[in-house]
Length: 240
Ligand code: GLN
Figure 1 (cartoon, rainbow, N blue to C red):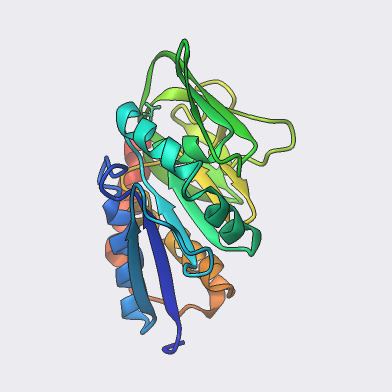
Figure 2 (spheres, helix red, strand yellow; figure 1 turned 180 degrees about the vertical axis):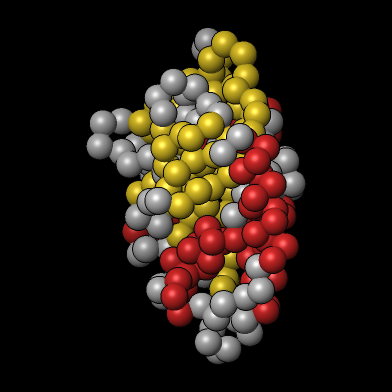
């Protein structure tokens, strides 16, 4: 495995980074380093061209409405074709909260203000009354993801769009659909912050494997005592 390198493209890390989302990248970096897998991060912000073939995983974090507004225009003009090409060749994408909303068709921020999205996930988001805040746990293919959510947007999945998981506790996409996040192949959107990956080591490994195009079982096992404790704590916080 040592000849492998996980190449990350971090999109708008200066603008989309609330709720310690940078911890997700640190988690990936450490788990690769402990296994002798190389790790590279390229940061790409407003105005930067994106190379569609340069990354195994694109990462978008969460953001305030006003920062999302700045990113939405750039994402759907300067970077649109590259991100679509990345996804079309099976490249992985993890988008959290504000980033998730921008992977859909649009985000209706307020009457008369609609942010364009990439349309990579067949979802759209509308601003709702009040915010959906709190600890959350979801079931994903028989396993649990636990995290924290805080969003004003409600994300509606088109018929046929697969959610990431089923809400066990918390609000999820709308507060009433029972669904959290969305997934199409290796393209994943979720509202789970926390950050997500340090609280869910199994999902970090799933993502590393998906991005490298290998089976998660090929990754060397690690001593996950601390990670397991973080996961248990996040589940307890969500009451699951
Ligand atoms: N600004 C978006 C919302 O409120 C996303 C928030 C976030 O990324 N935490 O819905």
